[in-house]
Image 1 (spheres, protein in one colour):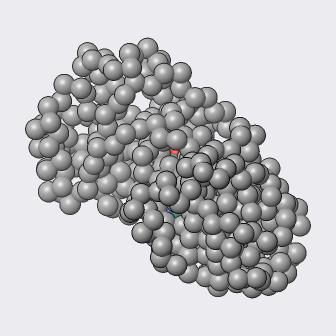
Image 2 (spheres, protein in one colour; image 1 turned 90 degrees about the vertical axis):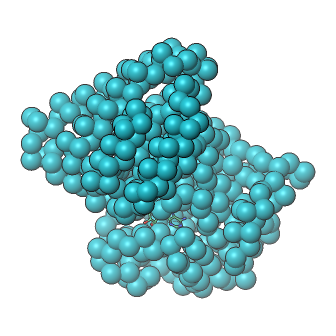
Length: 397
Ligand SMILES: Nc1ncnc2c1ncn2[C@@H]1O[C@H](COP(=O)(O)OP(=O)(O)O)[C@@H](O)[C@H]1O
Ligand SMILES: C[C@@](O)(CCOP(=O)(O)O)CC(=O)O
Ligand SMILES: [Mg+2]
């Protein structure tokens, strides 16, 4: 029986270039964000598994014998190398009282939790009697990888409780990370969780959530960027809700309909990611303003490409126009269709200019904040190493 109280966290991400194209095997460049999802794991009452997801309004509890019986029906051949099957997901929906085709955040979050819990425990151990609470600093469904950060935290917690990976946090330590091999396993299971939520994810978001930092991702191959300069980025949330699953499916449809028109766009996005990688790796750690015009042009071109793919939105057009009126360049990030955009802030941008751009963006009803990129990947924390804000959020039971 699990006896320790622990907290783990995983970062959100910003895709600099390559969203959507990455689903079709092209290169993406992504960086971890300093906004994280936290999971509190506690011993539960014997024979009960409880989950609380305040961000999406879920609070559920099940008898473990009941879950064991369900697992016996659906999870006989569960493995991190296999995607969740339609039959497995149908059985989980029926068990949880979720309507077929339901795509509300609470339904997808519950389904991903049940799938990961039953599949991981079927392979490595027993259905655990634990209480799990997940709370996030990330906006949900805004392009910053909240689904992946959720799936990475769940994978780490469930694999640890089932004994498939170690608990690396020693007494007296404030944080700890897992070995490369353990991180690879966490990443593989998190990808399965993303499949439940997204349908057809590329795997870039869970890779950043697991490894952190800045990386190049292509068809499952993860390569940390050799050198990433300190980039100042303004993140703007248009607050227009959208679903990654729906947008990814829309792009697929468009490519099937107009392959000769759309494939060159995907190739061009791939070229932008590759060129951008070369520029970033050649830039000094603290770049001067003359390094920026090329990066800014890449943002502009890619934003046009993403509009061609059909994942733009009037709110994102507005965001780009407002920042352009302050001589700043922006693009959407993540799945688009609303959600967030990123704006590059060259080092010679004066604080009053950034302030003026922020004010104009806020006047559109958007929320914006400056961010640091390159945060650490999935991490275990001792409670005393967490900020008062996080502790307070995790104190809700
Ligand atoms: N804190 C959270 N708790 C539970 N589920 C979450 C949380 N954050 C995200 N999710 C799940 O991820 C989904 C959003 O994923 P997605 O549409 O990919 O947007 P994004 O990953 O850009 O935030 C939600 O509908 C929900 O199912
Ligand atoms: C559109 C896509 O490239 C990124 C989606 O990111 P998000 O869920 O919007 O944070 C999809 C994917 O790579 O799985
Ligand atoms: Mg997502």
